[in-house]
Amino acid sequence: MNGMSPIVQTVARFVKVFILLYGIYLTLTGHLTPGGGFAGGVVIASLYILLTLAYGKKFSLKYFPRKLAGSLDSVGALIFLVVAVLGFYFGGIFFANFLQKNYPGAEFSLLSAGTIPINNIAICIKVASSLFLVFIIMAVARIIDKKDGSKDYKQDQEKE
Image 1 (cartoon, one colour):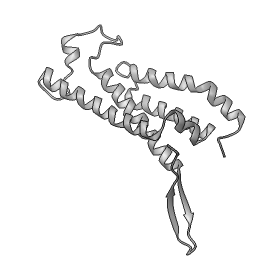
Image 2 (tube, one colour; image 1 turned 60 degrees about the horizontal axis):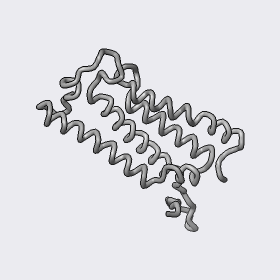
Image 3 (cartoon, one colour; image 1 turned 120 degrees about the horizontal axis):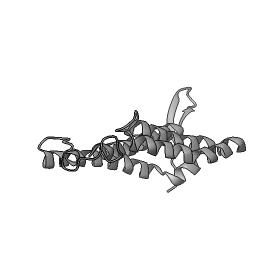
């Protein structure tokens, strides 16, 4: 089956932009409000999970393939690590908020937290891609019955 009913597909088509914008909002304002990179990443991953459920895995994998999700997972971790090492280099300690110390912003503004928004973006990328990868790997997994009565695990592969 390629997705769900046309009603579910229509609703998913209308709400996908709002879900993406809300995930971005949570990520970018995480240092000012409850939220942050993890919450924003979960919301963005739920968007791709919704699209997978509504339209089918082929549609979702066309826009966000597993290789891209795996690469983004690594990129998010790399950005997080680079910011930490830069804190050590510029601030003297691991994860030092060197941008806040050198360029203090006005309190409660979007650019007031130094390296924290960069860390939130890195965490958002990592969480969104990791959760989508977990979901899509579980979605393509199949348990098949063998002739001897035992069960076996098989994973469908998408065409490259």
